[in-house]
Length: 197
Image (cartoon, rainbow, N blue to C red; front, side, top):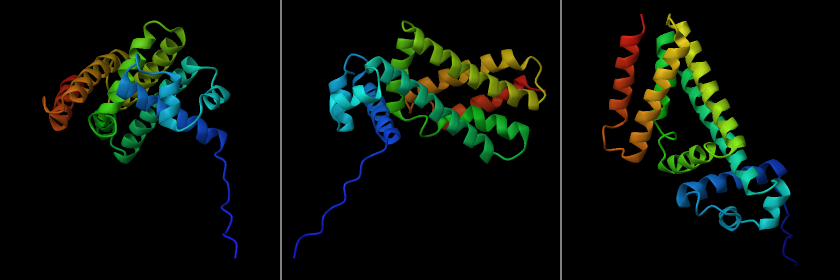
């Protein structure tokens, strides 16, 4: 009796691209920009360097795709938090702002990748464009939530609250024992309470 032949399955192009993007985020988080190269990414993804070049124009293209994918993933997390908050405008606003203080957004690996993206956004036009689009989208959605709560000058208030949330997120990601997620939520809620009618 012959052994049953195992079926060979080929991953779709989308799955291969996603694997490479996930591997790039992981390598950026673990090794920073200095240690992020084709060899390290392909080893993490378990593929050959030729496969990377098949799906991306090079490492710069892959890192840009990773930034865009990470931004999209964060947008989905924030949108889900708002959807789960129900219909009350203030609850929806609070959910949007405080989602940054809960996993997976507070994952230390995310901090490593995010700081690499920020560093590249200062010197690479494509990364700067991804950054600008991502932050503009976040602030626009925040401004809409603020408007629903009756805020005047919601656009400027969105900038203020975004900076506050980013600062708290960064500190929590660097040292989760510094003040804790619940304290960050309380600080944001107090700020919102003071700033909104």
